[in-house]
Amino acid sequence: MKTKRVGVLMGGWSAEREVSLRTGDGVAAALKSRGHDAVRLVWEAEGPGLDEKVRAARVDVVFLALHGRGGEDGCVQGLLELMGIPYTGSGVLASALAMDKLKAKEMFRLHNVPTPPYYVATRADLDDLDGTSAASPQRGQHLSEVHGSFGFPAIVKPRREGSSVGLAKAANMAELADAIDRALAFDEHALVERFVKATEVHVGVLDGRVLGAIEVVPRDGLYDYRAKYTAGMTDYISPPRLPATRLRGVMNLAERAVRALGCTGACRVDLLVTEGENEYVLEVNTLPGMTPTSLLPKIASSAGLDYGSLCEAILDGAALHAGLPGSEERAAASQRRAPQRSQVNVLEGDEESVPLKRRAAS
Image (cartoon, rainbow, N blue to C red):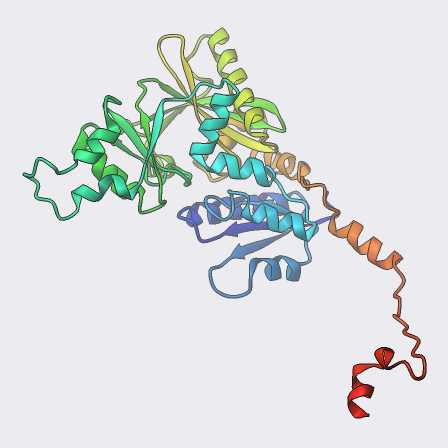
């Protein structure tokens, strides 16, 4: 792989752009330090299109350091498939399923992977909050009917965002309406999930094999965007404080979640482990963060895999998934094809066979 030119693709226009830039800088530096011809490809909202940027860099493989919409949801993966350039992470379908929390949960249920109960809220569910007096008995009535006996606390998050962007915890109907309203700023659908009092455990998976697990203990009680990326906001415990047999069950469940979505490459599975015998999968992250505070590098380190080795291992798994020919195969095929000139024999007196230019001249 060291003979290939690697493009580390970072940036993008999602809410996780800054995290992506930090991930990309770390990955590019690690690969260069190990002798790889690695170049930073920063995806900007302005300027050349992404396909032009990738083509101009003349890279052989792309290390995806993107996070969030556009980069983690199958869009860029589809572009690279069409360009014939291998890339790290999961393919188009698996990426799209994992990014869409609703579809991921539907797949989990289909494959008997336990996940917390949920429902979806939209802007229409908040309509009676607009222009209605706070003292009016009709205020919030529709949302109350939708929520029904779901109970509190509840967790609210955008349907298609990562890094806990827009995540909030609601203890009553007023907080629920406010949390849904904030989540809808990021997506047209908000996912309302039943709060489960449990230990939060994250499992790292590389090429279908579990690397290890880590327990996260956010000091403010909620593992949101700020807790994830602010040093000192969260305590990390590896291995998690679980009995060995329970931990093996949690890691097995993480593998099942990855298989249910068809994910490949490096993944991180987020789970809840209750004091009883229940475990729940929250989501699968197909392009985990690789910043100094990110969980996958911490998990890999506990397994004896340093940051540079982890980057190389992820790079080694770069592939095309759609079965289309790669860029090298296309170039070879085009060289084998000899150019053919179309010839048309025109017979004198045959008006229908006279070219249009000659016919017009006559």
